[in-house]
Image (cartoon, rainbow, N blue to C red; front, side):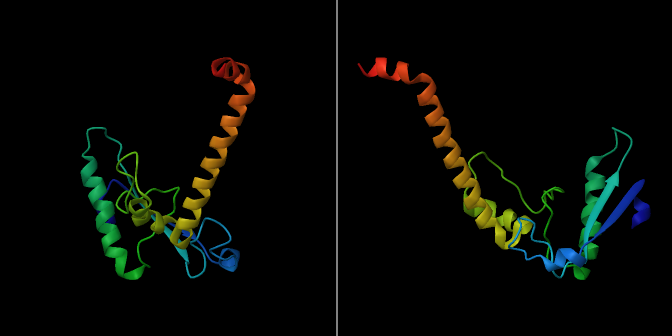
Length: 144
């Protein structure tokens, strides 16, 4: 299977050790206890005229071959796995995002979504207050 590609790569990033001693809930990165490796399947092609679908299909075949030997499909957010899912429009609901978000963040997804919403809300209030402080004389003139 590896010989089907010009430059096939499978990278194993070791996990475990100290990582497994930190709870999944302590950081946004949940892939800790029980994970021995992150497996990164890659292929590189040098010719721009090469068929990208052929290379992507190879990665999918390798993934399918490895499926019986690995945990259920999850992903590390810095290595996007578009087969896991993604936002397809600008206003994705929390329910839609949870389909792929839970694969990246496991049980931390909803907690992170709440934090993002809270931070967005607080930032909006701060921006509004700063605008009022900067332009208060315009607002007062408008009111009178």
